[in-house]
Image (cartoon, rainbow, N blue to C red; front, side, top):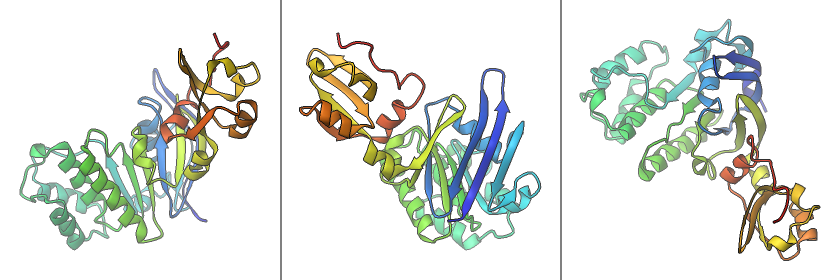
Amino acid sequence: MKSILEVRNLNKSYKNFSLRNISFSLPEGCITGFIGTNGAGKTTTLKTILSLTPKESGDIRFFGMNMDTEERHIKERLGVVFDGGSFYGELTLLEMKALAASSYRSWDEKEFRRYLERFSLNPRQKIHTLSKGMRMKYALALALSHQAEFLIMDEPTSGLDPLIRRQLLDILREYMNRGGRGVFFSTHITSDLDQLADMLVLIDHGKIVFQEEKDSLLERYRIVKGDIKELSGDVLPLLHNLSQTAFGFTAVTDQAGEIQKAMPDAILERASIEDIMLCQIEGGKKYAASAD
């Protein structure tokens, strides 16, 4: 399968934060969720790979092309949606569109008009009067109206109501159904990825923790519930995010088979993406030193 984006040993430093040797590769035909807590480095990574902020070192390739030497050709093929957008609030939707369309030789005016109608957007309305949900729909209309082959989105559903979030996710599915495309979807709302994502990349404190297929992760991890009396020294190392109350314990494990052998009465339930994320980030891997 061809890679649509390859990032190798990317480094970027600020006064109080740095990306350290970020490396990952995204295949064509895949929706990838880029997950992590607020401040983990998601937005910094996206801005750096798009050359919106200069990198210190590393190799970035879209469609096999080097971002350092072929930025213009690459960006012709990208659609980008950032939380809040980068719009001039006093312009109308049509006026802002004119500025955006001038950057793309493949701009499709009919497609843009179709999205405006679908999203019930008034082309004469000024951008500063749009709600957050309508502004995000407008950003998506711009991103999808020049035949973009790869869509990069930073926290697109943050602060949106459930109905608008569902509409945006449905559009991403339609976009992928056209084939030969990809989506890189940064979010801390992991529930949006449960049914949408094919691949997950987790970042924590500026480092990539893992890149794995979502279904493989969900198959491997389980929530464990049981009696505190069963927490032995052999079991504790198999558990992450151990929480204890007077009524029992709850934890996360990626060793379900071993847990079943050691604790046959324990209850095992499906873990969510959020459960998996929290047991992989800094501090989440720790387990209780005792079962007191």
